[in-house]
Structures are given as structure tokens and as C-alpha cells.
Length: 74
Image (cartoon, rainbow, N blue to C red; front, top):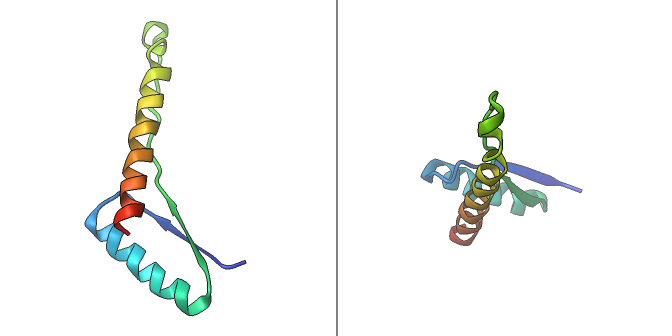
């Protein structure tokens, strides 16, 4: 199976890279997989840790919405 992994930060340059990957995918009969990485904050104090799950869920939701928009624009 041929797969092209396309990292994205949802920028215009990332869209250009995705379009180039699409050209390669057509030539090599490959599929495209988009990936976005975000940093999980390191929290040391216990009191702040209680909010960490909510913050991580919000970060994930935002990334998923941005990725959906990116794919739709693609």
C-alpha cells in the first residue's frame, strides 16, 4: 500500500504541500493521510492538573475542527 503522510499546521503553505502530495498520489496511485501534531502542556502542580483534561479535550476538538476545515478546503 502506498501512503503519503502530509503534516499540516493548517497554513497556506501546508495547503500547497497537500496539493503537491495530491499530484504525487495520482502519479503513484497512493492515498493521502493528513496529520496535525499539537503539544501537550506539562503541568507540575496538582491543583492545575484538574483542569488539564478539559484543556486537552479543547485542544483536540480545535485540532479536529481545523483538520476538517483543511480537508474540506483541500
